[in-house]
Image (tube, rainbow, N blue to C red; front, side, top):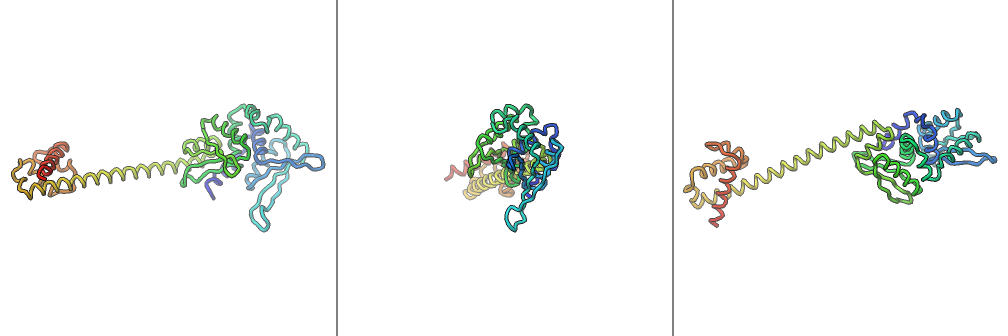
Length: 305
């Protein structure tokens, strides 16, 4: 099961927000609801791609109206095991109540609908249902991306505006005739998951982020150590070349004892650090003083070219 599906199932297993049941119903109705006219009366259909999704809207309708809607199962394609679900409100009185509720909130006038959202809980529900019914999230191992794809630009602008109310600043893009509201910042994706109540998925995401951070730190340290080793080895070869040149030209034996001592140590221990070389000197020298003497040998060798 994909990370996106696990995230959605986590949310759907929770009870709807019954204190804001009107918004739960309206959000689902807006994104996946439709109207059927039968014998001069209305029926409301709610589409669901999963059984758990159908049960979610079923519970909302039953709690709100003390009415049990019908359930239909349809095969998406002939001879296919893929199924879709329909939660059907056949009672015209209940259907009328749902339509009147939609009118009360100006559900199909985005600006007025936004103005009617009075609480942060209502806005959270809109984001939750938008993600459940129109959204997806990448597996964090493969990268960070959460998106909600909508048919109308006004819908996308509404979702973007609500996200901004929670300090999430999404991007908007037109893709395959759909308006895509998306987030790529992992911090903001974490914030979004917290808002919609996907706490386990949030925990899983943070675990992956932590692992990636540790791995990156290790790689950076490894690269840093490798670069330091490369610099140390190159410097050591340069020092050894200079010392051998001075030795071949019988110059080294005429230099001061301290320069002869550091020369012999470097030839004997070509790969140790300057700090370790300094500790072998008598008396011991600092790293800076060791470097100064080796640089002096290099300059002497260069002056002989």
